[in-house]
Image 1 (cartoon, rainbow, N blue to C red):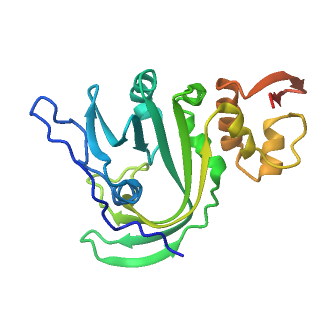
Image 2 (cartoon, rainbow, N blue to C red):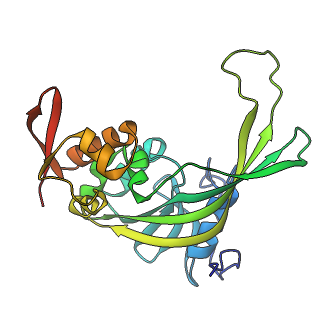
Length: 247
């Protein structure tokens, strides 16, 4: 059943003076981010709220709610600063199913397709790599939304043909459905994303095999879990680093 994500909630938008006006707010906001904000906002919430020199997606009482659709690297300074004084709840969507709409240079639909890429809640480590230690703060909670989405890509004609030029670029992401929500309140909660059957001491190769994930993602999993204190280095198995969890 599709979630009702496109209905507007009655919310309060604070009036800002010229000095308070944000440098970054809804400017350039994509459909996915806007739809999630509309879905999450409740009556009485403050939307696009200016605070401590930042713009907060939603303020609900003394809680700050942020929708972050990309990695945390670009906002780590903001999060590290705010979490020292405020309760923060960050929501990150992960597309477990993606439908792609291909547009020509003029914006007309050329074709539609379905992505074959397989993603899961474990892909939160792709985003969390930017500041994995943030999950250690008692003021911080993380919520993963597993969603179905549309990605709109438009054909581009580069001014000069070079080998790294792309023929298409993503121009928008649209929410279709929220499938599942998972919350993480402490480093130990992230251990639930490790695959079943993982031995007490494991390597990245074990994560790749049992979790059916890429080696690149496996390296990000262990990097994040090490830096937030959920796992530690237990030694080596040949040339591979052995890790063990602190359950």
